Length: 249
Image 1 (cartoon, rainbow, N blue to C red):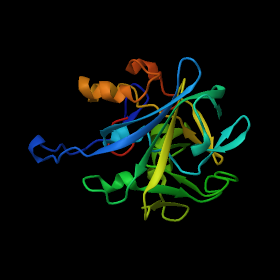
Image 2: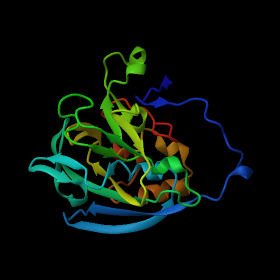
Image 3: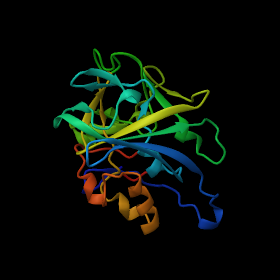
């Protein structure tokens, strides 16, 4: 796995499917809550492609995940735009955007890997990390030192997909038996949050993500984020990170 100049890491050897062999693109409904310029909250939903770049913006935290805030831990589904969460880099930071979607196991036309969750047992990464069972969505990355990549990173911590940490004992893969709701958050800056004592990231699509999209798809993607007018508005990433399944960064 090679390191890119922007701090991301790319997977190699991904097979390219000829256009004629591709199935029709599956779609799904995405829900967004966002902070308006006047400080009030707005809610909307939109149908968009169920592709990795879109799904990754809505699928880090399972229903019930406890996020650390200045006022204590709050379940992700109880957060609203304008509330603050605790971050490692910027202290209390306002939530600008909350995205959610429903994962439907075995939904027609969807990659089954997009519905897999990752359960992390208590104290897997040290005392209180996590404090209780933590179930991460397919879009979650955890700040860690991947043991298999120490030659590349040394002691540097890297945002690693939760699914890459599966060991079959303390970190296991789950396929939910019924539909589940998953969430993600956007802040003013990409930052590290704490979920049940585990360090996780707020949403960022990745440096240069727009280069993998045509103009129409990019416009649709950006329309999901009312606080974002152009790709550069997402800012920089706060730590090096490994790619999620199906993404380059």
